[in-house]
Image (cartoon, rainbow over all chains, first blue to last red; front, side, top):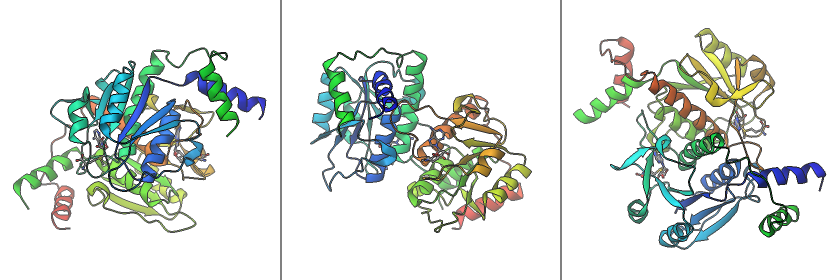
Length: 192
Length: 192
Ligand SMILES: C[S@@+](CC[C@H](N)C(=O)[O-])C[C@H]1O[C@@H](n2cnc3c(N)ncnc32)[C@H](O)[C@@H]1O
Ligand SMILES: C[S@@+](CC[C@H](N)C(=O)[O-])C[C@H]1O[C@@H](n2cnc3c(N)ncnc32)[C@H](O)[C@@H]1O
């Protein structure tokens, strides 16, 4: 391991946002999950959460653009568990979802702890997730299509989250190299 | 054809942005092209341009989320032709590209006529396209990955373009139903 690579690890780790994550509600296509994992890494997520599709297996490549290895994944058996775990951590649950109570995605506050909940490719968000979400966020559409690709929609919203957090200086943290959690992650990255 | 559907066609057509397009520089994966076509339709593009990959065929589904049929596609044999055609129309050429002369994508002006040039999955933007582009735009990354998925990167930038155009009221146009170009498109949409 070169010195430069070690410094890069520390720089990325320093900017990791432990209070911002993604929760996919039965999204199942490998390329969509891979693209979301890549975006999650790019905006500084330490881990993402996924709900196991009730039909089919959850398959994804940890390799898209080199991501995956650096953003952890947690798989939940159902949406109730996934949302429960995140709510217990104190996260607001923001669902990307078109509804009467939805707000424009740029109007939400992404500087507080939050999890962005994304619906499945065909079925969209489950009724449970829609009911339990604290907010519904929509991305405007001015065309004939009815929705964006799920990984595209996630990226558009997360880019706004990153923007707000950058404005607030939330990526300018010091790294405590003596923190056991930090040492554990650094060790894992260095020894794949 | 129901009255409601006809009205929807007219509303979408009224908001079409004829001075905003996309040019893909040898992007070849079907799912990426389909996702970009879907995003292009969603933000109001009347057509997109693609450069034929030098290896492999250009394959894409016109069906992703129902798009494609409503956003035209123009295929060029090479990037020189593609950029030439768009420049002749008076479009600024904005390349999504990481370089020394790049600016943050939110700093560009998307209210003037422009084409967003996207690089290929592996090779990125060609040298020719990078040299000839009027501006280079980058989307920040705070992680280990080196880039976003190409359809994700296109969507992030186009969402900002749509935002700027909405602020300027550029989607609030009247539709001239007697314009032959408008009648031609309406006819095509009504008779697939
Ligand atoms: C392909 S869409 C699902 C479409 C599905 N037919 C439906 O009716 O919900 C997959 C997911 O992407 C997100 N999404 C797509 N377009 C969106 C938009 N315009 N606003 C907010 N979220 C969107 C939502 O989380 C959605 O559940
Ligand atoms: C997967 S990337 C290409 C990566 C390639 N290895 C390279 O070095 O350029 C495909 C295209 O997406 C766009 N893109 C991806 N990430 C970007 C970013 N952070 N800023 C600007 N454009 C980006 C660019 O147009 C790029 O050519």
